Length: 263
Ligand SMILES: NC(=O)c1ccc[n+]([C@@H]2O[C@H](COP(=O)([O-])OP(=O)(O)OC[C@H]3O[C@@H](n4cnc5c(N)ncnc54)[C@H](OP(=O)(O)O)[C@@H]3O)[C@@H](O)[C@H]2O)c1
Image (cartoon, rainbow, N blue to C red; front, side, top):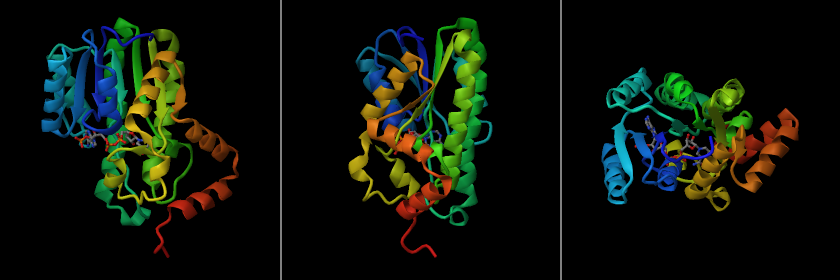
């Protein structure tokens, strides 16, 4: 896929952070932007702002952590006459803490949002993409997906899933007109850390802006990259961690992320 021009683009997690930054990068009179998140008011305000700039947008408020949400959303889009050319699976959240101290409700919601409904939306959109060709899927994972992360065990595992899933789909669909790219941001200045309940003091100065990450991800999709780590230092750290023995990298991560009062 060489351009976003004339495409119908579905973005999940469009109401803030990286997704919102992608929406603003994709503003163009030739595209149709379909915006998904839970915050209806925020999405509606974005749609009105986009329309004032001559950009076609429609809000689809939806809680993608609920079972069956992707099917309901897809039915609404299809009933409204849309066929998705570009799917940006960006919505996601993490929870910080020892595994047994994170509620099962939060844990299962993470699995449904970060994995289940991402897979379901992808599955539902691909048949139309195959018919029309020149399509793209951008899945937002994380550098946390390259290894087990103590105190973010489930979140990191969901992102490992997204990386592995995206790599495989890239190979399956590359010569069938669908580019599949996985974006792996490192720490990024968004609402993510607050929702995760993570300590940010030590990390804040290494954070990239959502805008930088959004630009890197959209470019990577147009270039047809398989996996793109945003930010040069994140790419180096990700590479080094692959070369470090598992035991060592787990001990270092535990030391860096472990709560001071963990016993
Ligand atoms: N920030 C980081 O450091 C970082 C690093 C690596 C990867 N990432 C990944 O980047 C992606 C975007 O996160 P972000 O950093 O931009 O965080 P963010 O500012 O918290 O944005 C998350 C987006 O997802 C939406 N969302 C959350 N729960 C949802 C649900 N149940 N159903 C539908 N939409 C939902 C949120 O909107 P509503 O609240 O309105 O639903 C929001 O638009 C995530 O997949 C995250 O894992 C972030």
